[in-house]
Length: 178
Image (cartoon, rainbow, N blue to C red):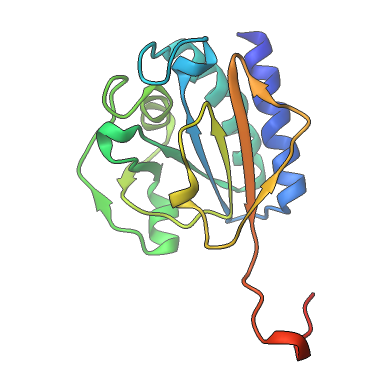
């Protein structure tokens, strides 16, 4: 589990820098604990692996004031677990559900147990994301997602994909962009 913690911490730290995340931004994380331990997604849930990843990532995000949105599995329609403060800041409506390891996933369950005031929401528009093990987080990112290649290619046995978002370019050839 120590190696998993190191990989997770390195990945989130690098993404924060690469994506230019700031205080108040949202980072969505989809995490298959099954894939981390070398099983097929949804068939080998590991609370221990999820807790290792969460325990490595959450303090880094908290220190920088970045909100974590923990994506649930498809059994909860990929709902997200966030802090109530995030829901209030972004005007998100809470839904009634409490994730469990086999219905929501071990990572979302860990977030629910750890957050000070957890709530579940159906939709979010995150500023960046980490997909650990093929959990398909794209539906929770802002419209223009840009792939980010991290130096960390996997966490445990799970493949790692990362993305940042940027504002849309509009205006055509006469427009100027930053």
